[in-house]
Image (cartoon, rainbow, N blue to C red; front, side, top):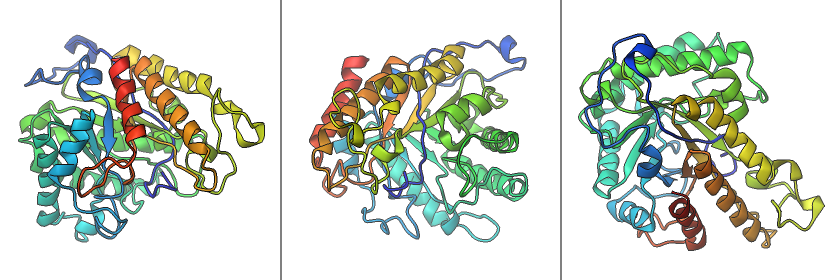
Amino acid sequence: MKTFRSCSRTVLFCLAALAVSTAAYGHAGFAPESDALSAGTALKEMSPGWNLGNTLEALPNETSWGNPVPNLTLFKAVRAAGFKSIRIPVAWSQHADAEYNIDPKWMAHIQDVVTLARRAGLYAMINIHWDGGWLQSTYAKEPAATSKLRKFWSQIAKSFRDFDDHVLFAGTNEIGVDGVYGPPTPENAAVQNGFNQTFVTAVRKTGGNNRTRFLVVQGYSTDIDATVKSNATMPYDTANDRLMMEVHYYSPYNFTLNDKSTIWQWGKNATDPSATETWANEAYVDAEFQKMKATFIDKGVPVILGEYAAGMKSKYPGMDSFRRDWDMYVTKSAFAHGLIPFYWDAGSLFNRRTGVQQDGAVIKLITEAARTSS
C-alpha cells in the first residue's frame, strides 16, 4: 500500500475445498504430515487474518517506520480480538551480504517473532516483501533475481523446516515492473510464474516439514485481473494440494490509498457523486472476487486476500463511515466467495507495545464479519 508505506498495489485472497489426486497431478506427491490445516479447513481455521505491517519489512530497520519490535502482548491482543492468523511481511536484503547470505541474527529474530505469534495461538505467514524492489518481472532482471530468490528461500526454509503447518511461506509480494502499470505483458507473466516455481522448488528441496508445508504464490502485481489472466496454472509441486494463490484488493485507489484525492465516499450510502467513484462499488467487489473463485477456488486452489484496507483522509472526517462500509463489505464478500482475508494494518488498529485497541470499531467489524460469515 503506497500511502500506508506498505508496498502494495491491488488484489485479494481466497479459499475453498481442494481434492486433487496424485493421478490428476501426474506425479507422486507426499501425504500431509498433519491434518491441522487443509485446503478444506483453511478458511475457517485461518480467518480473519491481520498484517504486522510497516515493521519487519521497514527500511533500513524494523523500527524505522514508527513501529516497535513485536512482542507477545501484542500478538495475544490480536488473537483475543478474534484474529486467527498473522501475515508477517519481511525484508531480507539489508540483512544479507553481497552473496545473499542472510545474517544469522536476523534469521533468529524472525524465528523468534514467528514463535511469539504461535505462542499466542496464531497461524503465521512470512514472505519476501518489497525488499528494495530487486524482484522485477522482466527477462533482463530475471536471472539475477531468480538466483537471489532461490538462495534466500533455501536459507529461510531450512531455518523454519521444523515448524509445523501453522507456519506458511509466501514467495513474493507485489511483483511487477517499477513505474509500469496496467496489464502484464506475456514476458511479465512468464517471469512472475518463473519466480513462483523457483520459490516452490527451493522450499520443497529443504525437506523436513517443508515437504508438505502450505506455500503461497502470487499473481502478477497481486492484482486480481492480472492474476486471472497470467496465472491460470499453478507451479509444479511435489506435494499434493498444498499451494495457495495470493491477491490484494485496494479498489478504488483514489478512495483507499490516494491521500491527495478528493474521493472520500464509497458504496450504496454515498451521497455526493463528485466525491465517489461509482465503478468500484459493491457489485464490482463481488465480481472481482468471483473471478478468483471461478479461476482458482472452484478448481481446488485456496486463495488468500493478503492485503486490503482503506486509509482515512483527515480533511474529510465524514469519510470514516464510508471507510467502515468498505471494510465491512470487502470482508463479507471475501468470505462469501471463499477468500481468506488478511487486513492491512500499518500500526493504527492496535498499540504495538501494549496491545490496546486503537480502532476498536474496525477491529470489531472485521472480526464480526468473519464470525457471522463462517
